[in-house]
Length: 496
Image (cartoon, rainbow, N blue to C red; front, side, top):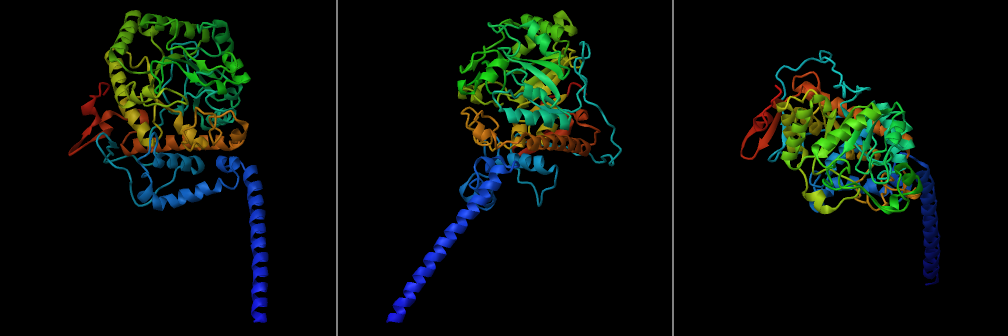
């Protein structure tokens, strides 16, 4: 009996020592992983959440198997589904690659497919075509290098390291970067990329106290040769008919200085430009900005009431084509932003699917299509969506949220709370340190490069040399219970 008790006692001591050793080993491993994660720069989540951030990738891998039983399918989430986000995360790290076995896309009513050509050209037979020049009649016309570019994201809505990554990435990827309505910050300029200076209704960066244009400040900003165009924003997809919103928590001393507003107070832009309450006054403001800046000047808007578009075009026709904006950036009513009222996000403005072909046709009927370039934006984040926009008639496509995913966005839906876990839309230093601008700039470059490559691949498969040669006959719209209908049957292609 004694030997049995001694055995039990020895065993308990052994297991106690083993337990302590295992706990000690786990602590050592935890410390090692903590040091590794907090010092690495490739994964924002692991850097901001050392050790615990590793479980995200692990559970994401398990989710591939369990999603069909417990979670949303890959193509069910909103505003962007998992398949779209994962594709961008993948190509921004590795560039264009193939996928196995077959498509998981559901072809429901309204889905777009493309009509491949029977005799596409061989590799090397395609003719190169430079993107369309913008503002040929202005003092400093702009010849873009890329048909796919970075849409408006301001310093304030996005963090300092995020803007720096976009600036350097745009330079490496040879595309333009739109500053967003928050003004031209040093971080936009840092990468020496081509910039589109967006003037929202508050005219941050070149404003008077009453939100009117300060010509002297605009002229000073435009002394920088990297400013290539001026975009006068009338509205954006998430809040048509309402000005921009930057919560007070994001209005730091530096941002207040750049924008020319009080620190620590919410920046609420007017619902419209105070100088432009009708089409003629808007044309006057466009002319004023173009004369002061010497740059091609255009407008950004969401189409709602089509009669207002007709009135604007009629005003241009009355004055002459020279009075027209050099470009129109079209956003869809389902566009995004960091902060906006839900009624506007969900219910206001036409989607890009309807507004883009409608606007193209209106400009064509008026004889202004060659005069005005059209830039499409609003949830166009994959090659197929971009190719559709070219079929509809766009000259360029820009994306904001696509590049946010390239920076590492995980769609945490905390843009307006200053607690973005990946450091993209927060000014909290703790979260920002997870976003390394040098590493993310490479991802931006790979994303824009992959998009250009794969959109051109679609164009080549359709039998044309470049995306701008795509027509509405190259896109087919899926119909429920009926044969797919050519896009040109829904919106007759007036240009071809």
